[in-house]
Amino acid sequence: MEGIIHRLLDGEFMRIECALEKNFEYLDKLDRMREEATMRELERLRNPTAISTTSKKKAAPQNTSVYIMGLTTYIACKQLENVCSRLGRVKRIKFYKDDRGGLKGDALVTFATNAAMEAAVAKLNNFEIKPGVRITAKVAEFSKKQEEPAAAAPPLQEAPAEGIDAVTAFLNDIQNLHPQVHAAASEPAPPVPPPVAPPVQETTTSEAIPEAETDTAVLETPSRSILLYNIIDCEPTTAEDCLDLEEDLQMECSNYGKVLRVQILLERKVVIVEYESLPSAIKCLEVMNGRWFGGTQIRATFDPSAPEEPEDEDTKLLAFLASV
Image (tube, rainbow, N blue to C red; front, side, top):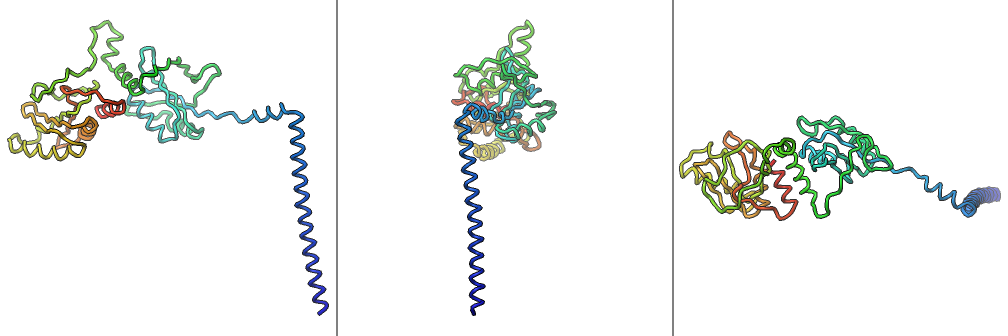
């Protein structure tokens, strides 16, 4: 019995010795940490400039900008915005312009991270942004005296006036890119009138409705009335058939907003759909233009005899994108 007690006491003694040894190691570690902290504080007090210089020598901010070349059209610029937004968070996109305000074809895209920039260079270099338009991309190089990439060195364009909206500036670029405008600027030819709609007229006669056109390069003035071509050609022209067609179009076009009237002009082979609001008409134009009906493709345009100026720039941009 006595031997068992001695063994238990010896085991307890050894346990206490090991615990004390570990505690001594921990206390020794704390003492070394305190000494090191004290030495660093003394060094900072003796030479504060060296510490501040060392802290300032941090890693320089990484370059997150990509320089794009080959953007020849406004649609290519819009496509670039969509592609870049899928590659990463975009902080800024700058499109360079010439002295006349037209697009030069170059852009500077600044991403939020360096990884997004590298992915953009790999994706966009020699990328076909739209059919027939290929762009080149490389890491932007900045000099100390100017913010522009030193490789291409396009001249800095003056910032637009504070009152000019970015959307309005983009639409002005499109008008500057129109072939007729370029011809007027380069040759001493008679001036070409801008693509403005005729004065506002409240009329439903067939004489006010234009024939179907094939030139879609002219910017259309938005309207709450939509003209639908290539529908009458596919249907019989009896009064009963026209009534059925009006009911079908009334039901279909009501999916995009409140329809005020649907009118079929047999002699001009065109259908007029008038909406209560301009956004509803824009949505109808976007969906119906190019849609197939009875084996032919519908062509939808704004009614130039009833133009309406959008109240905000977002609606103006939506109307433009729906008409191109």
